[in-house]
Image 1 (cartoon, one colour):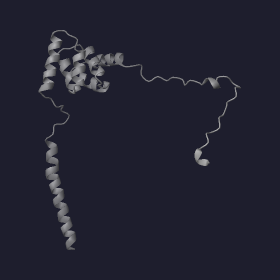
Image 2 (image 1 turned 90 degrees about the horizontal axis):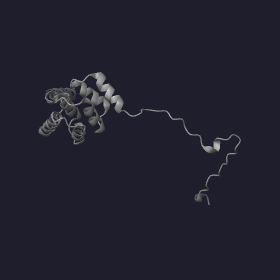
Image 3 (image 1 turned 90 degrees about the vertical axis):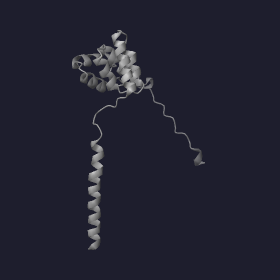
Image 4 (image 1 turned 120 degrees about the vertical axis):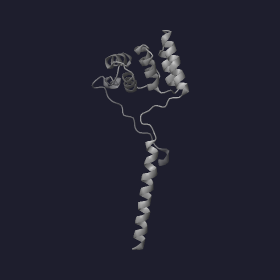
Length: 158
């Protein structure tokens, strides 16, 4: 009977410690907040500067994302800076950002969904196409005999 009490008390203490320390560390982490740093802010300021000079920002968006900066932050920064939406979306897609991320970030920055969808549709490839399988030449002509080769003989059978 004594062992059951010790086991129960140990289990109760472990659960209490888990509740006290396990959940307190999870509360301190921001949720869905992309980390920003000085380099990313500098990249944003460079993009905004290029927008003010009316330069093509597609390559700056593409390069920033390829360098490892948050694609969403770069897209938002470019849109908020007044950049051309077509150039921004094109640069992000060329950098490898998926269309769902591009559309979500662009709309979060204030772009209209119809315009974003229109640009993404013009950038997308032909999509999934069904091609009929090719029929081999030897089967094109009915009545042509099919030559069956015997299987190779294994040297282990000797």
